[in-house]
Image (tube, rainbow, N blue to C red; front, side, top):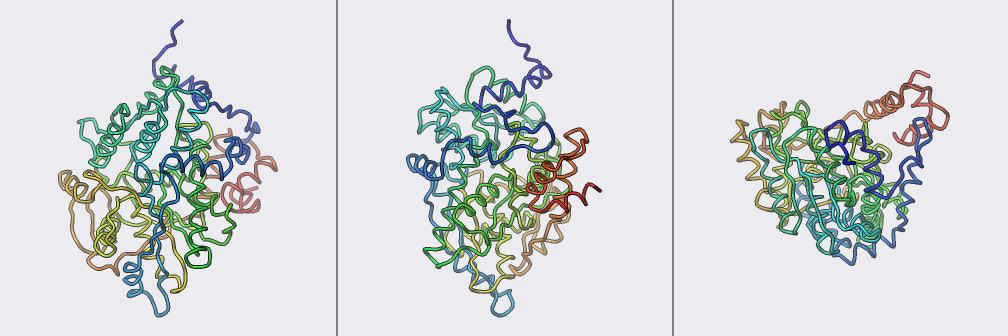
Length: 468
């Protein structure tokens, strides 16, 4: 008998579809309460760090250069107090096949799909991950479908998202483009069910394990280049995978004292699910519209339990403005001779400010760069903003107090200042949401320990948050 394909029926079969499409039974990790066995989930990828490195090396992924940004470091020191201004390095992930760190996730996920005998892979993404999965599928001989949230209800798409669709198609993938809204996940599940393909999710343990090589390489390259571990690593933060995988890799390398900083573009006030506001943002990833919801509620992704759990590893969360990121994109090109796409430059904009807080002998690493292209360059994004009635001007980025109304490019580099987000509040939010999702149960001792690990705090903090 044919299965019903209406929205409610498909969504009701979500867990069943996911189990078949991932080859993982998530129920085995559940405690029946709030806690689940996260490390067991990660271990069940079945791959060691060494094995993942070998998988990636076969498909032009990993071992990317670590580039010292000497001129940008020198500029930052002009605005720092004497003796301050860390050395800034960039891990050049644009050197990966497909041009971003997402190739690390995709290489592992696609190789696992091939190992299990799947004929094809599917990913739901508007971003670089689609290109990464399409690239790896082409290399490894599998079919590929990318389901992409692309347009508003008038059929108008962000230049950067359209550019990414073009890249996916260039690799031979089929791209299903949708308008913003709940149809994305419904369509994704329907296609998974109809094709029987593998769910190459961003948030599966295979995807996150693939990023661990990035953190491991950063530690090893820093030791070789400067004789010590990095003092700080700044990760552009959206869904939390970069923070999670990089931190896990650094820890596996023994870099236990490196401070992990998440950086997102401040899009406070813009709803990512709003059709009207979809094209009022002048960046498509690495912003608070993804970063905050995924940090405080990791499990609202396309798998039952997300392997990206950034608050477990985050020491600090900072935000920057759209104009600051676009300015640093130009600075990177004109001062260092390196043109890279905007998402990785979110971390660079934050790093320019953070470097001024650290002594001159400190090492600060930006965990990624990404490829640029016709639609990913800042000029089409700014032109698109103007077409949508957004004012573009030079001034103090703090004047960009309402995203979707203006983009303020800093009139002087000294005006670039990251701002600390309330990590204490985010930790409390995760704890309360987790208890609420579990039906308001009284947490067990195991639940309290789990929530402490989830938030990089302790049981006393969890109890205080819950009033226990």
